[in-house]
Length: 286
Image (cartoon, rainbow, N blue to C red):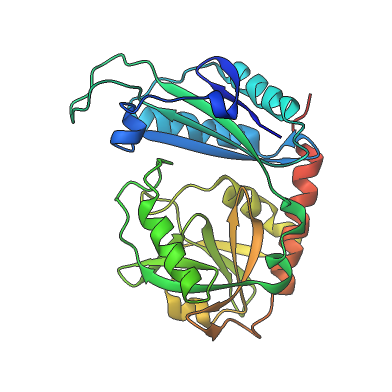
């Protein structure tokens, strides 16, 4: 079935939605994006995604194309138009289109698009097996707290990991882990403390990350926000990633070396359960 997508105020069949080749999102990666998970046709963590969208747009000086109320209504509409029960809603906003030039004109009209993807979020097989990841140098740009579409380095690193039989990568800068290719990375120490990298421009300010930290107490976990190394991660009892599409997924090895007993950790799986239950209880629907 052809999806219905949203582009600049119009609902269109996906094969009829066209963006200019002069769009700055295409020529300069001058664009941001957000991803909201959908379960049972309802939106998860939507207020957090909206707040981060505004922060990213403000950081790049791109105007918000619609009001917050209209943005929520558009999300409800695209879910309904595509009969999306479980999956993701992607939105992308670029600065707009004009003749290619490093200098951009003030007052460009942003290009605003949205589409859906069907994804079985609740039955991710990696929740049972855990992720095997590789540690690689972090070669991304310096303002990773802005959710831009500059994802080429992450994409290439993840493809290389797949060729080597791994599931993902974690990026390492100055000896410390920043995050995974498209998710935040966390460990649970032998003392039972959840450790996550403190927020800065070195990593994305994950919405799921924030929600999970807010729920840590329910899993009998205290938490610390600080930098930590690959060596400390390998010495931990458990490790996991968080993202809008993965929720909470266990990590069982780094560079072929097991974390803990090399199996998904009990506390990680409990956090996943608590997070999903909490999100379902607070999801936004019509």
